[in-house]
Length: 429
Image 1 (cartoon, rainbow, N blue to C red):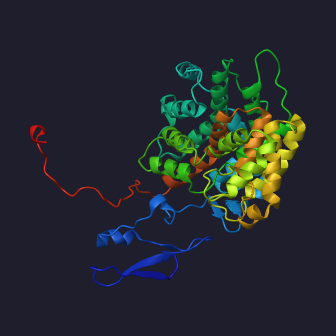
Image 2: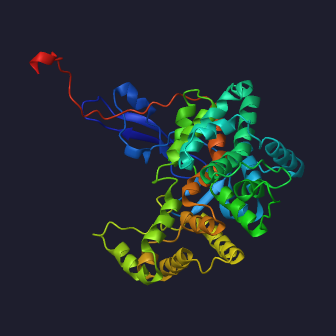
Image 3: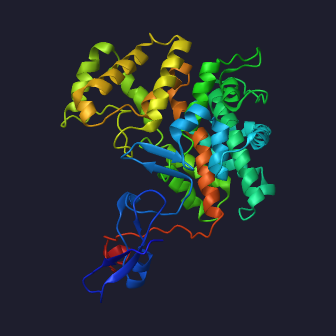
């Protein structure tokens, strides 16, 4: 806490209201407004865009600089030198593991990849054309019915094993969502494979033959998971924290995060990129749609360009750009019509004066959508992939909150409805 103070003068309230100003290790100072309730006042901040709802040591974003740090480590360094499971360990524990700790952690995660056979019956209850995110919401929440032995949120060991189970089982459940939609048999995990290789094995493998996983694709999948592992206090992470503040079990909390992520304004952005490419349809129409995007009176917007948080560039997109080119080459997908449209749009966005001036650079959703399309992942699975990677961040934030003193979330409101009025009997209305 700093020695700085903020003062607020409000008509009808005697004297100035003095509030402490808090300073973090990075980022802007924060005015502690908690004393306002004692004066009969609340703050009004739709979307909580100017409100710090918690204190956290996990992730920091500087949108103006295009900076994303996990426990102080730049995302570019983690993407280049680390891998997804090591990043999971970092988010959960605060430090990178040594060689022995990493091996133990990876072995622990891989030992939890199986799901109970009864989960198969859950999937039998879904229509073949059910949206994968609908299935994920339901099945992840239902995991709590299988693990009564470790649902004491006040027990650190229970929280740890729940974290391990969630991180380990999400790829298995994600692949099951895909297989169910295709009417194909579920694939058991192969724990001789790495985390991302195993996911691709369960997604695209079949019991009739041994899976062949392209190392370029496996690396790309791992980086997609890593780059989506956490992103500070976004809508879904805040939802997980809010659900967790009620004392709900971790599976219910993660299920609530999946539900929030399902919204097209949050996790559906990379799916929207592919839908946009399909709307454009042909390279000959690119100029037409770019012109529409520049027209303030046209509601059309190019999806996957610019970012709400990053006012300069999305640091994750630079990593994905290189991976994108590698995957397209490995899959021989350079001539796919939609991907050709995407690459031409990328070139325009990086060179066109309008996009450069407004800093509408391709973001992580633009490239991840292209990569997953090239791999063969259908668009309705994109958000499921996002949820699989983001589980590490969700569970880390949930654990951080539960490990420290916390209050149940209770946002206030500015009421603009009727004042008190008397009930009128039905015959007199």
